[in-house]
Length: 427
Image (spheres, helix red, strand yellow):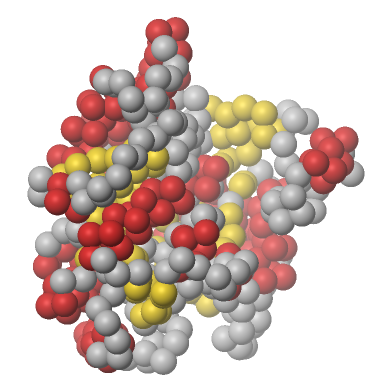
């Protein structure tokens, strides 16, 4: 056990999980690579949980942070803040929500917590619809609506939560249906659920479930849900903490795959916009955002240094078409991994969109999740010089692959080759 690991265990909570049998200390990074305390270089296919979304040590972002730090780091939301206004203006335009207002937070958890506060206040209801296998953060209210037992340490909640089918396409009672029939069955389930009690405040849903293992429904499911929700005045909250900013390649926001019936009422974001800085937020129609009748501020949400980073990062993403790069390079990566998976019975499915890819592992010859294999592949990939993540609602048996959006074709091929060797070592 390293000295740092021993010190970690002595002073930090037992439930603060670490990857790897011999935990890794990352000391610095550049581009799509990071280095550990022993000087070993790794190709980073997880980006600090989809957070270093553009690149490590991106010059445009580090320059913006350095210059802003030389002026003022923080003043709170009690004062006018030019970088916050400028970033809010851009996000409001990009959101697709009419008459949009933006509130900045420090994390995705806090963003979802704020969205729940707004929705329940606006609708005067504490009932929430959430998706099975979902994850929305670690605050008391967001844990209470999380539909994934591995990440829900308490059943206590300030909210009443009803769970809806549809977030997982290839498991569950509707998995055998065609896409159209799957959507129809999920809509019928939603209608049945709404007939059982008072109308909920909102449905909160990740267009692609992140911690749940990068699962998603067929395109159009949430549009079909929205048609039903609007009949009851129920709001739609799109949790874009992991799917936003072009990561899926096909769309800038994940909700756009379900946009036939219009944009969501509220949209939450975090992670990639700050490229490692603590930025989160909520976008909502003005009438919803302005429904609070008590004072509210944010001490650290929207602070100047994080806004400078977010603004520089967003400009870089748009000017360099990183959404297009995610589509092109991500498509190649998925094809490469599916070709490998076809030869390995340990792989149940390779799924995803753009540079958001999940590889689900099972015990060969069964449909039973194999978390031991996932842990072994994680270790083998690290030994080969590749960092990936894991997750999944079925015993954490899904490898999560989400590199920075500047990933090159050569790096995608290199990472796929390392992952192939790691998979073959267990399969």
